[in-house]
Amino acid sequence: MRDKATRLVRQLLDRMDLEVTRKKSFDLGRYSSIYDADSITNRRFYNVGAGTFSHPYWTNVDYQSDWYESNSTTAGSINYDLLALEPIPVEDSSAELFYTSHTVEHITNDAAQNLFDECHRALKSDGLLRITTPNVDLEYRAYKENDRDYFYWIDNYRSKSQWRRGSFSGPLTDATTAQVFLSHFATSMSSLHRDGAADRISDAELASIFEELGKEGGLDHCISRCPLEIQRKFPGNHINWWNFEKLARMLKAAGFEDVYESGFGQSFAPPMRDTSQFDNTHPKISIYVEARKI
Image (tube, rainbow, N blue to C red; front, side):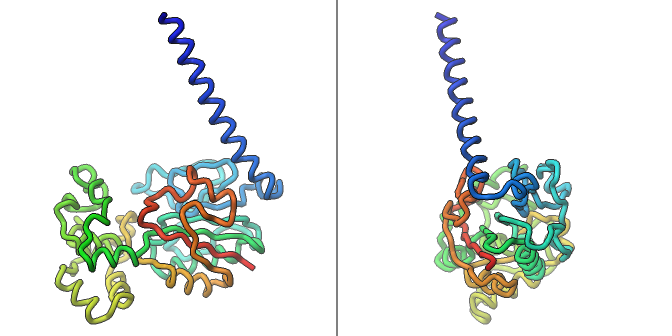
């Protein structure tokens, strides 16, 4: 009886391995049906802020640090500091695709503009840049309406080990909705940060800032007060906000003429529709935007 059960388990595992192999082969075959051998061999697909992402045809572009010690260091990865405002070491008009997920909220406007400029320079004609990042329009609405349930991720920061890893001084479940909102686009200005700016923004001041400056002006005011030296110490902090209008402005300034809002798994580039590889970070709160180089 035990031998029969063992054989059944082995058969099941063999079928699972076969399905994984088939899926992987289908994924890789999709590339060869669309892109030329040079792009595949030289991995001319770039994931900026890639973290632990790994794919045989993609090149990871990320900055190695103690904070992101789990980042992938696969052969051919590019070690690149977005805040340095330097060129990405990729040849002009050579890249097929750029993808960046939940990265631009960690960098300044100048760094984001440099990134978009560099992606436009490096992409081939008809090449695509895909961006996903928290959608501040949704978060601002939740803040104004005190929709605390929207900020579901605070449950991830209940234990001391979790909230200290996130640079917080205590569990987010104990924080006000205003401070949770503020911490998600200007982390070091929130009272929740364990080593943040000297002039933190209180709930009352935050309300006053938006009343006086309006939504976009208030958001810009808050991120302008985030010290860069703290961001370098805690690169997981958020120091920026994004919605479609802001992304479109900056992408068009980079030279992209075709900019459009996308959706989860809805890329115009078939490889980036694979949600096992892409778009799988907090889809409920994210905006998806693509820009095509003409």
